[in-house]
Amino acid sequence: MLSTGALRAHLLAARLAGPVATSREESLRSYRLFAARDPRVLLGLDPEWTWRQRDLIALMADKCGVSADPAQVSGHDVIDPELTLAALDAFAERLARAARHRHPVLLGTGHPHRLIMFYAAIADALSAAGCTVLTPAQGSSVDITTRFGLRTYNLDYVRGVALVREPGAPDAGRTTGAHSHSPLPVRTALAAAAVSGGPLPELVIGDHGWVCGAGQLGFEAIGLADTDDPALFVGEAEGRVAVAVPLDDAVRSDYYRPLTRYVLNRACLSP
Image 1 (cartoon, rainbow, N blue to C red):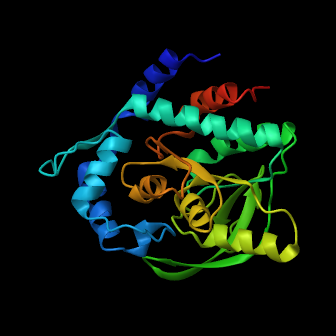
Image 2 (image 1 turned 30 degrees about the vertical axis):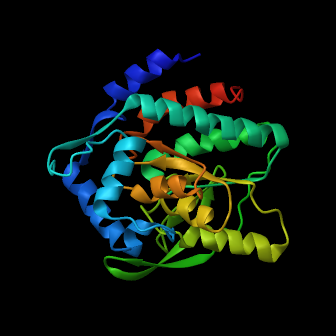
Image 3 (image 1 turned 60 degrees about the horizontal axis):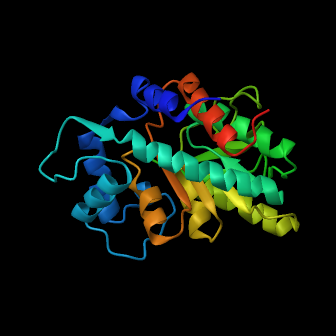
């Protein structure tokens, strides 16, 4: 069993928390865009409250541990590992509840290169506990606006975890896919589940638009978020995201393995 102390040390050594790769400039840019309600950073959330940049800095200082000083405009962001650990415990509690009640679940990621194995292990554990891991709309086309214009992607699932791929991408089933912030994939999946008359998820697990898009539609949603993703933390503050875990979401994929072991153990879902 991975102890809290050991995980804290790993978070810092792997730069999942503590000083992280995300720059203060990147985060402040995201906060400015969020305050202007730019859909690229809203991630499918429609905020109820007015969020100015200074409000977002204060929120992210409280939720993540970044500097609360608006005058700090450069350098690396910092995530408080204690806030990451507390959020991972809350994340694990939601997993345990889903397992106890055998809730249907939906998992999806906009970071397949980094995070898909983290989510896949959770999908496997929940399935073994009797939860139905949903895979609606597999193969469906999703039109997403990118900085290169409107692009069409295909919705795919790998070990129960949704991702999007560019059309013609080889070897469906591979763990690589496109990086995406869009809420359109989760909306497509949820709409397909509703139309088919199949079960709807009681819990959505993921990141980016998967969490905010589902939470905005009233589904319980939990996920991981970096310091330049204020939407998940705003969603949590406004009550539409159940748990947002602050950490660097773009380190090496194997660095997330200890987090997987920790949350599954805390949720009593370890093999």
